[in-house]
Amino acid sequence: MDAIYQTMKNDDDPQTTLHALMFNLDGNEDALNAFSAKLRAAVTQSYPDINIQNLYEALTELYFFFGGFLFLGVFLGSLFMMATVLIIYFKQISEGYEDSERFVIMQKVGMDKGEVKKTIGKQILMVFFLPLAGAIIHVAFAFPVITKMLAAFRLTNITLIFLCTLVGVVIYALVYTGVYLLTARSYYKMIH
Image 1: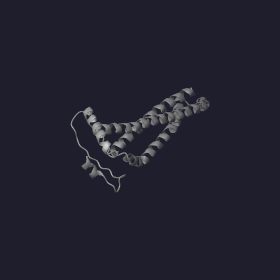
Image 2 (image 1 turned 180 degrees about the vertical axis):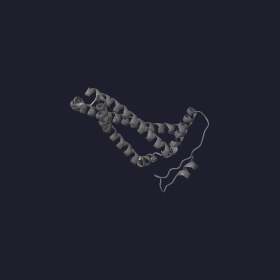
Image 3 (image 1 turned 90 degrees about the vertical axis):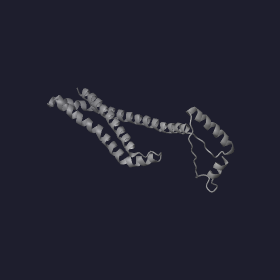
Image 4 (image 1 turned 120 degrees about the vertical axis):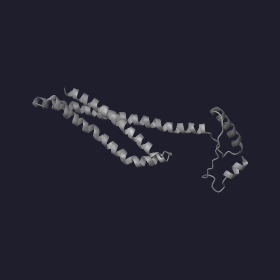
């Protein structure tokens, strides 16, 4: 350990220099964790600057770190999606109450139920899908920045990032479309 410590020690720049010595051991996870704990205890008494970690500990750390990001992403994404959907849904329903008399007048003038349904569909379609189109355009322009931010976490597989982004956009669009259909049906029922 003295020889290893002397080769890794750098008095000129002790804060920024990092050396790593890695080796493989045979055995199961419990035995390797026990060996790592004993080695860490023995080495840190003499050399507190040396950090000892095994693969299983490193993986656990990574799972905690990226699992936290995954939880935050899913939680905040769901929260914002629900808020967006509810705001647009209730906005459209309140407009439906205001517009119901106009559609009754249109039907009395001679507009049939099919034309009323088409008019409602077009009106709600524009209100719902213009923000969705704006969001997709925003993600498309933000994609290069997103890939650079993820590269800071050593996530450099651009194909995988693109596929995950595409899946996210498709899921969001499907949920949005479901809410659009629900809103259009509720809006149409209000008019009748």
